[in-house]
Amino acid sequence: MRAYLSVFKMRLRMELQYRGAMIGGILCQMFFGLILVALYRALYEGKPQSVPIESVATYVWLQQAFFRMMVASDADLLDKIRSGDISYDLCRPVNMYGFYYMRVMAQKLMGSVMRAVPMLIMAFLLPKGWGLEMPSSFAGFLACIPALALGLFCMCALENITVAFTMRTLDPRGMQGLLNLLMMTLSGNLFPLNLFPESWQKIITFFPYAQLLDAPIRLYTGEYAPASAFRVYGLQAFWVVALISLGAAMWNANRKRMIVQGG
Image 1 (tube, rainbow, N blue to C red):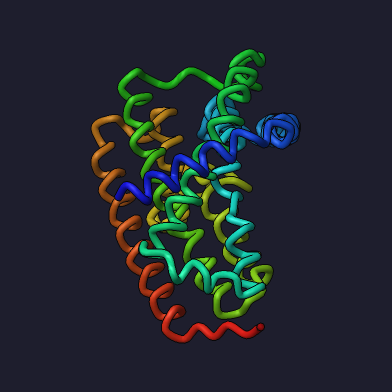
Image 2: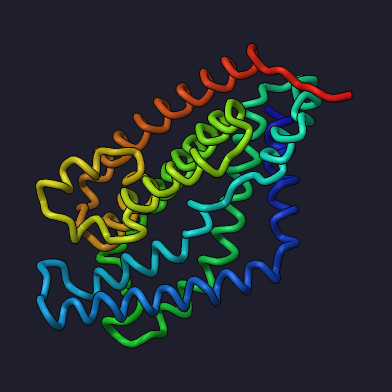
């Protein structure tokens, strides 16, 4: 366990070096957040929805603030797979899946925190209906924190499944592009899930993608009552265990059939 914690800490420190990327990411996500909120406000002018515009704006800003958690990937690992240098990692006295799970978790966690804190502060300062609203209740705010952590665990498991496909194809663009499209659509990043028809939401919210940010945001906004938090945690934990088990099995299968060429 000490080895995995050491990897986690080293990756956290590495992420702190990219301050320029952090500033660029904040400006980019703030711009897209304002554009999305403006589009939804125009939609509401033509046809008001059952969900208040303040809740939709809050949904957008929370998605944008934690966007880094969803898109960050371990570029070093992908380069090792393409070059064959991953063979050196097979010599490490650790479980390779756990080793890279901790790496990508630290990358997503630090990258998200560095961007989310200043973004959320700026979003709070925007006018009502444009910016981030306060949580529905203090209990709802507390309930969304464990849900956000479980969403991170789920996201890391999904990332390692993508890497497992890359080990077979050697090119991450195809499968990664497909899985990222599913993730962005079904997680609520492109279109808030609470604006989908109720019949669709019953199905979409069961998928693992909805556990990443949609579930924590609904606890924050009060769409999920704090009393139902443990039901949300249970579904998230189910997907965390299922995806980690699937990813670890795929990594072990790839390890048995791995062929490294070169001199």
